[in-house]
Image (tube, rainbow, N blue to C red; front, top):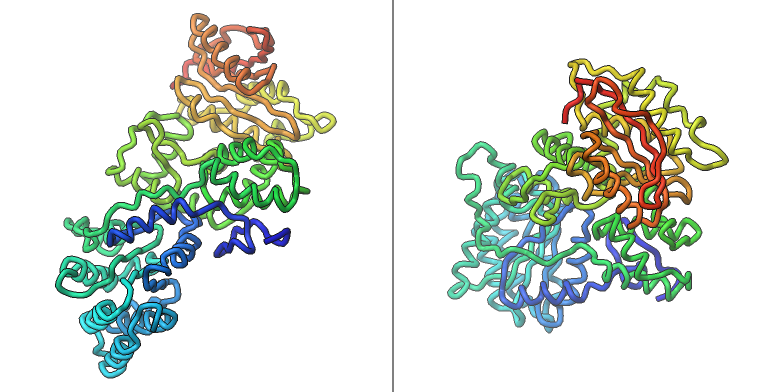
Length: 531
């Protein structure tokens, strides 16, 4: 291993070519499940490291088991048209993948030849019954217990024949004390088997009666912890000697990504390419650049929001309104979001799984809801807010208040806090786009407030959006903002208050609170402003 290794974001990862986290802990937990003879599904979101994990698992299990690792990715839709075509295709691939496992490695050459003979003689009449009789003979004559792994099972997601295949696996599992069967079966994909059945027969009342009900839950956490990320960075640091603070950078990467493997690798790759700036500022620059890109993962996130209205409504409530939605995995909308890797459970509530996804979703909502209003306004002309390469945040919030007073008209006569947040983010984005980015502090979307971290160049700004609730509530509001500023090590903060009063309760201004300078503007929305 040496300096020719790289951070990989496409395809399989190999330890001798790529910087990787240490997978040994996960592999041991999965092997414990295999040792118990469990059947299970590794269903995780796209680009979550499933295929890399399966490859590593195959090598990890090989000393003790005959491991057959297959993928449905290579099987065309024609192979799923009926059980005969599927059985032929499955048998051919199984036999090909079994070549390395014959002889001393575990599988009987005679049993494999028998399966091949049956496949050729039966031809188009070779069905699932004949297939599983042959597979049972292979398992029964093997010197080692046989483990079957199948990746990309989503490829079969719209095919009844796959459910019939699962039914055969289930029947052999239940009778394996009398009939030889695979010791353990591992399937991998985005959808779990319950969801596959919904896709195939969505209107049937018994759609949850899965033929895969012998499977045990897969509870191994595949997201990266800060400690996991540190193991990957240690390898990089040993090669490049950057002097980075491993602990701090690992935590910062985790803060933005929530440990989503692809996102972690993307940010690391960008920092490596950005002249190796392994600092917190370097992480922020990488986040900014990543959010400007169009990639398949981001496209999937937005596609899932656009294609599922109930999920879109839930995402909007969580990211914009800070709705306190109880996390209940049996709720199909929440379950869908978790399966896609977009939602997670946090303190018993629904939350977006990471800051990058949250910002991506906010960018999407602000774009589709407010593009027409802002596209021709002079208020968002970038040059008026940038002086000597620095962002004038005081002017940003002041001009936003002026824009709202002169330009904004709500067609139905009602203005909501949700709209105020969308409008401010839409106003801000073209100003900072290209050089800066923003992130919303998840813990502050409740209690009628939202704190936004704005990064521009090397500077950081905190802008709080809130509803004016009267002078009696102001001190507690200033305390909250000041607490947040202290936590971030900043001396100045910015406050945008949406007032329901017909007239401004007071003039805009700047004041000091607990040694911090706070710039405040009050946006008038009159008696049309709601929560």
